[in-house]
Length: 541
Image 1 (cartoon, rainbow, N blue to C red):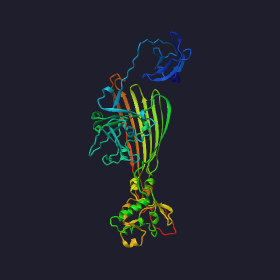
Image 2: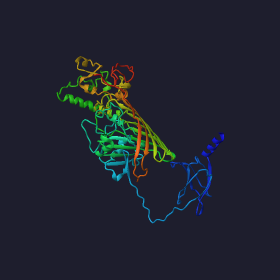
Image 3: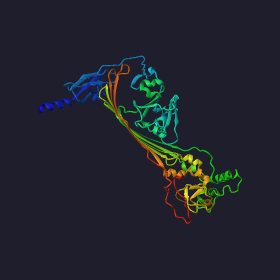
Image 4: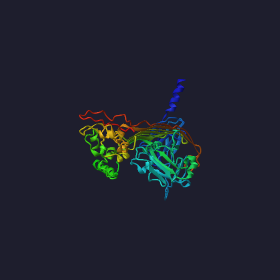
C-alpha cells in the first residue's frame, strides 16, 4: 500500500529533460511549456545555448508544447517518457505584402458586435485622453466631451454634482436624469425613500460614487434605441461606465497625487462701514427732510453713551471674512497584474477638498477590488467589490448671500468698552419700537429700522456654530460567472451566458446642528464698562 502511494506522488512530480533542434542544429531560447487539457500553461522552461532543457512536470497526462519564432509549434504527449528529442520545422514564408485589419467592436449590454452594426447613437470617451486632470466625479469629466450632453453644475457647494440632460430631455414631474450603468450593473439608488423630484444636488451626486481614477472609458447612448438594451429606464439616455481591470503581466504599483486650487471671483463693489452709515442716514432723511430721522437709530448715530457703540463703528468686509482659498488634494494608489489563470487590480483613493466658503470640507475614501479567474478558455469567474465613504461638511445657510447683504459697519466679534475684540461673535439684539427704551438707549434692544439686517444673522458665527453633514457609505459586491457557450473568437458566432449575484448596500446619514439663539459663541468677558451685547449664531425672532 505504501509503495503504491509513492508511485502516485512521483508521477505527479516527474522530472523530464531533452533537446530541441532544427535543420541548422541546437535551438537556443526555445519555449518549452507543459499545458493541461484546457490548454493552460502549468509549467515552463527555456532551452540553453546547446538546446537542452530540464523541467519538472505537474501531471504526466498533460502534453508538452515547444515553440520558437519562425518555427512550427510541436506538441507531444508526456506520458511515461523522461527524455525528449524534438526537431522543429521551418514556418517562414516569403510574402510580398502583409495587411493587418481589425474591426472595432462594441460590447454594450452584453452584445459584442462590430461598431458598424451598432444602430444606436452612441459616443465613447477614453479616460486616457484626460489622464492627469483633476475631477471630483465622472460627470465633471464628461463636460464638453460628448455631443448632445448638457451638463450644468447644480451649485458651488462641495459635492453638489451636476444635472445631466441628453439631447434636451426634460420633464415636469419625473426624473429626466440619464441611466447610470457601471460594469453592466445599473447604478440605481438603493434607498426606497429617495425622490428624484425633491432630491437636492448632494443627494443625487452621491449616486455617482465611482473613483475617476478607476474609470477606463465612458460610453453615452443618446437615443431611444438604448431602451432596447436597458428597457424603459434608458428612455432618458444611458451613461455606461467601464472601470479598469487587471492584465496579464508582472504586478505593478502606481501612485498619483493631484493638487488644485479655487477661489471666489471678485463680485460686487460693496460699501465700507462709513459709506454705508452715511448712505443709510441719507435714505432715512431724504423722504421727510426731518433732522431727527435717525435720532433713535443708535447703530447709525455712533452714540458713544450706548454700550454697543463699538459694535457699530467698524469697516467690515463680510465677503472677505466668509471666503477663502479652496484646496483639493487627490491621492490614488493601485496594484495590478496577473498570470495565466487570474488577473487582479486593487485600488484605493482619498479625496480631500476645502471649499471657497469657510467651514466647507469634502472627504471621500474609495477602494476597489477587481478579480478575473479563468477556469478555462470558456469559463471565467468575475469578482468586483467597491466601497465608498463620503463625508461632506456643509454650511447651514448660504453665507456668501448673507455677507453681501449684511451691514458693513457691524462688528464680527464681540468688543469691550475700548473697542478690543473679545471671545465670541456678535449679532444684533432684539429690535424695539418703544420710545422710552430708545431714549434710555437700552442695550438689550436694537433699532427697529434695522430688523431686516438683524434677521440675516452673523455669517461667521453661523459658519462656526451651525453645520450639516452628508455622510454616505456604499458597498457594491458583484460576483459573476461568464460561460462562452458557442465560439470564442470574434469572427465566430458567439453565445455568452453571464450569471450575476449583485448587492448594493447604501447607508446615508444627514446629521444637522442648527444655530441656537441661546448658545454663546464664546465665554463672556469681564470689562471695565458694562456691556450686554450677546454673542450667538442666529437671532431670536
